[in-house]
Length: 348
Image (tube, rainbow, N blue to C red; front, side, top):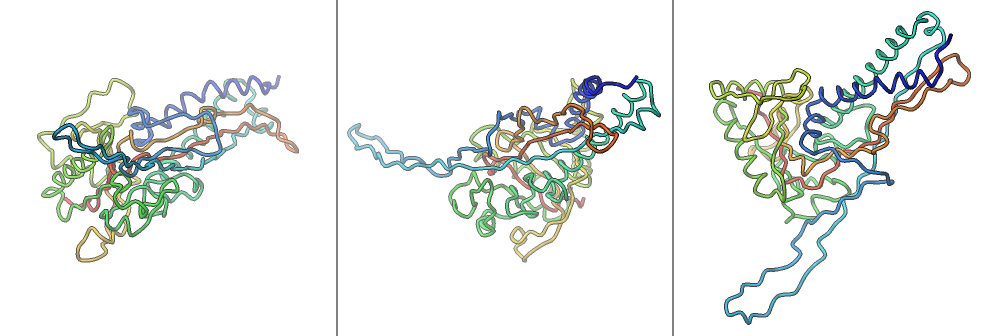
């Protein structure tokens, strides 16, 4: 007897939760975003709007005698950052021939499990690639942290002066339009030599600069390239300590820096050209790491489209049945000054 669409759908739903959990856990950015409160859920809307305060609302008046006139001049400092949703879908299909050749329910479940795992693995790679590098050939409407891959990229390996000159636009708000808005210009540090000599110093400078302008939160996640992570561990050596993970971490050990989780990601370590960090002129070197404050950068998911599965339906004109895995998400920013880029830290 053929398995009904309802039974096939309920079987896939039961597998889906575990596979979505694995997608988050096996991706350092998404895993830490979820743990650090960097994943938010929206009910809907055609776009995501975030209010930004990029200038001073009023001026303070010094009180000495108690009779001074209060400066009541104010300005409307709120500017909306507007982000468009990124939607993508992937089908999960099983043909009548496959059902007949694997006629037991257990065999069909195995097929569905393998198909769903394959789809989730593909999406995990594409989402991670787009967020960190901005070079996915599929998820091109998903925002990226890499400010060198796109004029809408969030973080640049540049001085604040050059970020103003480059004019990257995040959420429709140009960095160039707000030269005094330290919250809309990210931090950047160039190691300028061997990591063993300068690496820890530059990481400390980055964390201090980011913390000094953060309206809330602090750097809570540091993602490094494989080479930069190896350099960081060499630099620590005897001081190295691991966080005691109480939950499943998909086999990733976590090491800390100033209370922030430090993890490696193989997508990092790609070359970018910094126009301003090297006083001698443009320099092409690896983008070695992102310093992320998840109070400032968020992954927003639609609550009904967080890798959501549709029911199985017969495919018109064929003997196959298909379900769809649908996702509606976007990477957004509320504050960029409390995040940073580590440049050229792959050499020990």
